Length: 140
Image (cartoon, rainbow, N blue to C red; front, side, top):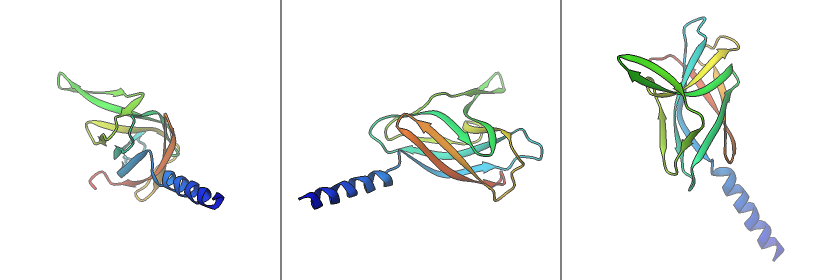
């Protein structure tokens, strides 16, 4: 009987390890011009959980600061506003794209080149999750 309980426990632990809170796909960081003080990351974030996921903090190993921004247009001018916290409803897909919602990576510690990867960490209500994001030319 104890053996059955152990097997069930191992299956449940394995299933939880496979079920990420966020499913992140199509993640890229656009290569910035030399000397740029900020870069932008774009991706698709899916919440497959049954409850909202509230991202309370984001960080990246390449830079001093990372934050979600939404671009707002007013009187033919673009304004960026920080979005904190960022809530993703159950079953919702959030797409980060140029000119809309995006992830700003500010204060690079060193210049990034095409082919580099940056580790981005999301902190949210139920834990943390990291993703490795490639640096690509903006036209890719």
